Image (tube, rainbow, N blue to C red; front, side, top):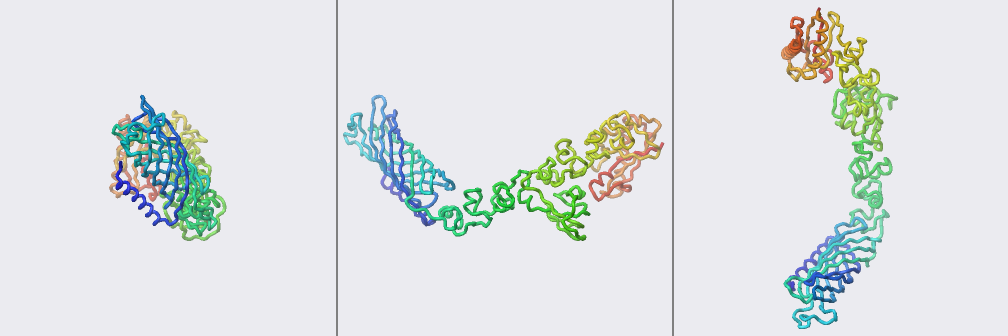
Length: 564
């Protein structure tokens, strides 16, 4: 049996916890309740029987999250096995500490533990005391420890019903009148009803929350909208599930009231239309653009033509003279110049504002396309078709750089917008169209080149800062070799060109080595070396603006000139 000192220490600990809670929360509550259920013993007589059980209790809440409970009950424990039988009425009296960490809904789970005393009197089937009981070999009371879990459902703010499961550890082995060295225990399951005796506080500020709810939630009981977001505290808690202490519950840059009443967005979802852009970004980010802008920085990508960024069709918001403009962009503010400007935003309730088959988030974050224009690069294919159907670049009207826009290739000529020479005949699709050849027939790809005519070999590329041909370049040069074999009297000059990155001498040498590399490869395919001459021009003859990445790419080229 637990000593009186140990039991007293446990009770003192419970009282200390209650005192500390009261010191922190000066609004205690009190109520009464009862449980009705079934119990079964766990003793040396193991064939137990379920028996009825009842308990009444007084519960005191020094704080919201836990309560002290004092109760008394009565139950019958009974079991029989292999000739052994016992039955006894028990009268338990205990004090419990009940923890209720979740207090935000009508259903509130709890766990509890306590200490107590119970009285027992084991008898036989004829209601006679069992032998050891008759001989007074033990006391008929013991201390015990009840532990368990349960849950309460509040049908009103004053009353609840619930279910509990309890296991009771006793400090005796005599409840069944048999002493084998272990301890006799019992468990039970019961229905519970509970009601508060104290009257609940009123709703002083009329926000739909009772004052004890406001105390629990730490809202202001005298201010119906504690966080000033345009929703009453009660509406936030009961209707929308938002945080009455946080004006922007989902952290999307819009206040909860704005989302509910103005924009009709979900105040609990930062991205209502799930397009990859937060609601606040869609509503608050405006793009002021000028019709004469070029080279605008958009989403971290520089060098895009302004007509690929925003739809400039329609009238401007206001006529303006040229002047500095601060553009609000994902990559940060950027000062540019304007003539006429207007504002545009995406729709936070429509995941694909421009209806091009890409969500606004995909356009802004992934593909850097214009979420307000269906065809960002103006090639007559929607951005969604380019990304999902044709795998072309929605920011580049001519993905394969063959001289035809992606839309022309798909819709008019039926060529492959990802392959510069669809029929693999040796002449790019755009060049074939210019020469009135069939870009789908390789047989007509042996070009008739006049003496002095210059041809740029699109796709003949090299490793960075090297003269080593890339695999794709060899495929093109294979077709060039076929063309030269088809014109055995032709002689050509191979000219190498570079961009302006690096010094003049370095680029002069690099361009010559690259021209020599092309000649060497053609010789390996059977073209006589005497039919080809080479020359490197470095960056002295650009055909595009070296100030842009696209221009530099065009300047890095191999040209063939027929000299005979």
